[in-house]
Length: 535
Ligand SMILES: Nc1ncnc2c1ncn2[C@@H]1O[C@H](COP(=O)(O)OP(=O)(O)OP(=O)(O)O)[C@@H](O)[C@H]1O
Image (cartoon, rainbow, N blue to C red; front, side, top):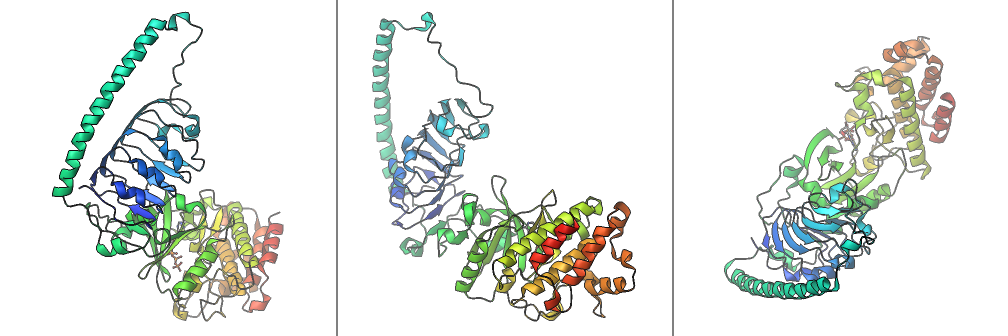
C-alpha cells in the first residue's frame, strides 16, 4: 500500500508507521513536517532513495528506516540532522560507501547492518561496534571487521603509467554518461508509474480529525492498551492513526530515557504481569533491542491532571543511587502510566518467594540491603519535611543481581485514593488514617518493619493475626520475655556468627517501630547508627 501524502502536518512531532506494509517512495511532503522529532518507518516496504527534502528536518532526534527496501547511497545530507541521536538503517538495500557523519556529534545509536555497503568505516562512526556494520563489505576500525586493504606507495609496479591513467579517465567519462542515461530512462519510467499510482490506488488516509488537528503525534497501529499490555499485538498492517494530546507522543520522559523508547514501543511490547496491587497492575515490558522497563498502570488516581503532572515531574527529578529512577509517565483520560527501570528481583521475592533459596541472603548481604534502603530514604527525607515515600514495603525494595538495594515507588501513594484500614499492609504505622498523607515518622515505622523482616525472615503481611498481633508487636513481646534469640531467622542463626550486630540492629528496629511517632529516630540518625553497627 503506497503512502502518497502525509498531509499538512507541519506541527507533527512523532510519526510512527511501523509494520504497516507501506510501499513505494517516501512521500515528498514528508519534508514539510519540520517539527518532527521521531520518525519510525520500520518494517514496511518503502523503496527508492530518501528524498532530499527529508534532510531539512533538522529537529529529528530519532530515525528508523530499518527493514525496508530503501536503496541508493546513504546521503551525507544526514549531516544536516545535527540533533540526531539514533539512526537505524539496517536491513535495506543501501549501497556505496558510508558518508562521514562527523556533524552528528550526538549520535549514540547507529546501525547500517545488512545493506550492500562497501569501503571503509569513516572515523566519525568508528565508536560503534561491529554489529552495527555486519552484513556489508565494510572494513575498518569497528570491532572484528577486518582492516582495509592498503596500497603500498613505494611499490613501483603499482604505479600507473600516464597512458593507463588517460584510459581510466576516458573510460570513467563514458561510464558516467551511460549511468546518467540509464538513470534518465529509469526516472521517466518511475514518473509514469507514479502518476499511475496516484490515479488508481487510493492512498493511505489518516482520519480527518487527525489531518486537521495540530496535535503532535501519529502512531499508526492499533494501540488498545488492554491488548498490548497483555502481550497481544495488532500487526494486521492497517493504518489507524492515533493522536496523543500532549508533548512528544503523550509520554513525558525524564533524563535520557527518551533515547530508549517512545510510547509506541511500550504499546507494541510484549509484556508480563508482575503483580496487581491496590495502586494498579505492574507489567514488565520487553522492548526491542533488549530494553526492558516496568510499567505501572495506576488505578484509583485521585488528583487532577495538573496535580498529577506536577507531582510526578517532581518525583522524576529525584535521582539517587538507592532509588529506582522514574523513566517516564503518561497521563491520558483512561490511562495513567508510570515507567521505571526494570530490576532483577525484590526483597520480598528473595525472602519469601517460592523459587529462591534464602541461603544467598547471608548476614552481610542483609546488612548491605538495610544500609542501602536507609541511605535512599534518608536522601528522600532530606528533600523537605513533607517529602515521604508513603508505601515502604519489601516488594518496593528492589535488588540488583549483586543485592544492591533500590527503593521504588516513592511518592506514588499521594496520587492514589486512600486505602481502607482493612487493606493496609503490615508495614503501615498505627497512627496512619489516610495513606495519601503519610508522615516521615510513619515512613520510619515502615522502615523499622523492613529491618525486622530482614532479621526474622518473616513476612509482615502474614504475621498479622486476628488479635492484631503484627510483626513489631510479636518481636517486642518475645524480646520482653528475654528470648531474643528466638526472633532471628533460623537461617541466619545456622549460618552466621554475628549475634552482636543482629541484636544491635534489632534494638534499632524496635525504636523505629515505636507506637509513638515522636519517639522514632529520624532517618539521618538511623543511617548513622546502622553504619556504626556494621563498622
Ligand atoms: N521496577 C521494577 N522492577 C522489577 N520488579 C518490580 C519493579 N517494580 C515492581 N516490581 C515487582 O512487581 C511486583 C508487583 O508490583 P506492584 O507494585 O504492583 O505490587 P505491590 O508492591 O505488591 O503493590 P502496590 O505497590 O500496588 O501496593 C512486585 O513483586 C514488585 O516487587
